Image 1: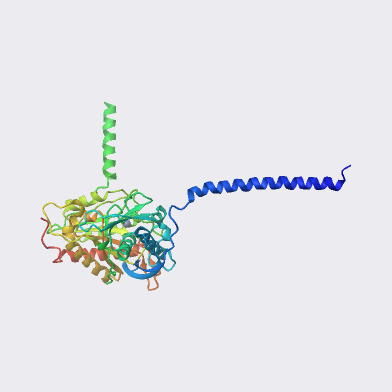
Image 2: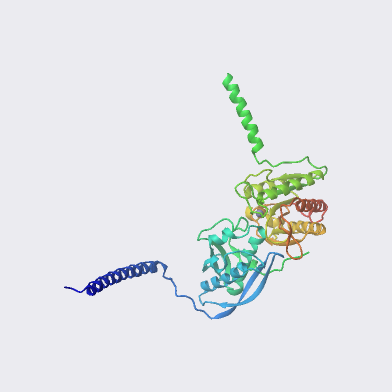
Length: 205
Length: 235
Ligand SMILES: [Zn+2]
């Protein structure tokens, strides 16, 4: 005769063994799924750990239609494309901040990518064309108007020129494609010359 | 016989309706003396709504309202006025420039409204002033008129300032205006603000629009006798 306490113990151990087996299968399944997801989410480039440097941001002000340079310290990668993206990201972070002089939601994430190409139609072979790819969300949430849209475009051009003088031309894409305007006014089909986007204080009568 | 007369009547009615619906530029009675045509261009229209104003109105409607006000003030002063649109219709930028260029206008004023900034924003095109040439590229035709556009902007600036309005003056790329062969500028109504930056009048407020329209009409009157306007005419 098997004692009653042994029967109870056997049942408990059996339940524990089955439970642990199920848990093991679950963990294995979860790990497998994470591995599959990781393959698509893997960063294509190593995260940039760059030393902080001084950058000149040319900041727009809606109230007097002005562009004014400001010095900011931020991590700047060595690669020019990544560097351009970093300074523009900081500029758009300023615009998204609560005390902004040129309010646009979105922040740094609104600059999807900056590609640097050889500039067309210039004598200097070192001249570069920056293609700034903005997100659709940024364009959709940008306030509409001649002043506000042109200030965004000009402050981006002037900021690029201030930090990467080799950039003489700028073109804009939204979600990787060309579109007629930023939010109904600023023309995004043209090539902007950074030399024409120098900081100018608004003329107040 | 009966059918043909009915269909003829229907065709006539349809044509009449079409003629009414077409965004035909409206002309007022020509002013006595030398021809002085003013183009008023209410920006946007139709599917192109422009900005969404905080009153709930769309920019295209606010622009049209200001255009109507300004047109009546100018026609009352005996000016010949041509508008680029008289209703909520989509008019291409090239079409607007064609209308202005065909009229050989003395002043072309494009009207906008926005929720950002403060006061009235005046813009002339940022094209570098150029000497008139025999063949002008369509996209930069305004270059030969740039100097006169800046003079017009100056006249409008002083009239608006005189009316007690906040004004900012700038030069930016202006598609559409860059193809116009007339002294041209864009007038964008931003909200009026007090010293604490609080909005005191929205760009579609009737009082504010009336104030701007009357200052613009005064500027056009001043512009007619401005020596900068009567420089060398178009080649
Ligand atoms: Zn507009």
